[in-house]
Image (cartoon, rainbow, N blue to C red):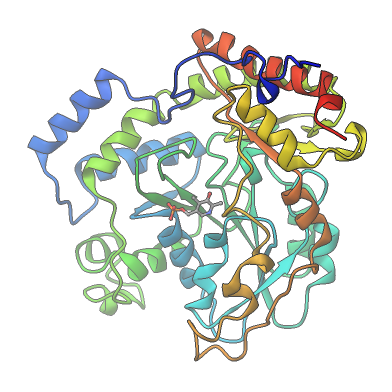
Length: 417
Ligand SMILES: *Cc1c(COP(=O)(O)O)cnc(C)c1O
């Protein structure tokens, strides 16, 4: 008996040559801008040139008072925590399901990451956050996973009730919105990554957003010593005497990275609009398939579609293991379908289970174990991630991918037994 499935000798559903997805979308304008920056200067110590232009563009785009560029998203997160005065003994509630850099800077500030479980969409569950508040809790950090904003109404209410800081890791979610309000503008401060595949990309880089002057000054003091602190912190401010050394770390972005992000931000809304159209088309096809759950997007929410995560439901397909389903999709030519690996529940990482060999001075840290975050772990185990394309000419490829899903679910019986 033969099967049309490529895994069993049939013809693949996706035949387009690789690569199937590249990001960021670089144009000749980007190349021209990089060459011009090479001439203009590749080392910028103050808030001038491309640094000022990009920070101004970020402030305008988000409608916030301050933006500070950094060398990475990890650095931006570190600066946010440090600038908020988070230190030894302080507990910060972070999502169990996030990229680890959401939480790891806390380990270097003496603070304690307290993991909280997610809801059915993979985002932080406000009810679970509430249960984890103690007298030592100082802040809640929320990640907008895969670009879909978390439940900010509920999280804002909880943090306001308990007088906690609300912080955002919006690395996946540049340009994502809840009824027009952009991710990264709900809390006291937000950190973004500008790393390669992120919706807004500089290749490498990051930034902090805040409306709070005090947090802004301390972000500068944390990672931007000397010139920037001396020119941007008022001489009358209590902390001005520290301007030369700051706190001693240097987290500046490279000007060539900044110029790439500046050329990208001009097209961000257009690109996200294109993604939204293709995401809608893909979801319509995928929604009807057995074994596949398309995540809800609440009314009024516009994701950035950093990824489209589907929940695989083996029970609907005769118990077909996800490994086998995934293998069949890969054989169909879906090179970009992914089972996210390093972005997994933090309690599954050795650093959170047994930090002592790397952080011997942190004997106070909780030691996490598998099984403690059942919803995050189930979400992760059954997650299949698709890229979301943004150009009209990508529609045939997006259709070929959803066709491959249809084909594998139609013929799942050939893979069982
Ligand atoms: C990418 C990412 C980071 C880290 O950013 P880098 O620029 O790689 O340091 C942090 N949090 C989330 C959610 C991310 O996706």
